[in-house]
Length: 130
Image (tube, helix red, strand yellow):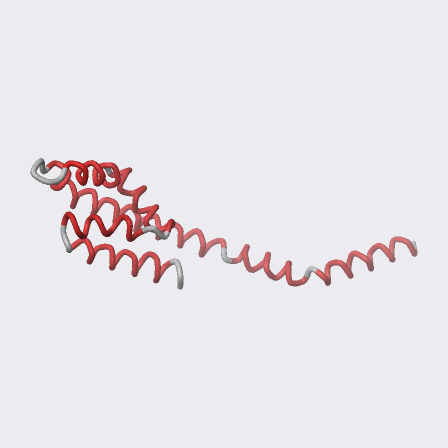
């Protein structure tokens, strides 16, 4: 019995040492719901942004009077709904959004700067950082 009591006290002492870990784990588990809804909101923004760009760039992709290489690049990135949504996922999570925005602003239309400034402000700053 004395040995069992000693073991129990040793376990209690070890648990006291891991109090911070227990607080961190409890906090993580409590925030899973918020994390899930944040991911859903980002997914919705990715889909909306991707579809807007896919539709907005369609005329440029099929216009034979503009640079062929630029048309191919835009088609690779924004040519279908899936490609465009995946590109928006990369824009959101890779940190390389200027590489996707700059060619559109310089080669297609300066209005794409408004789209990307709005998207980056909402998705990257407002949702991910706050």
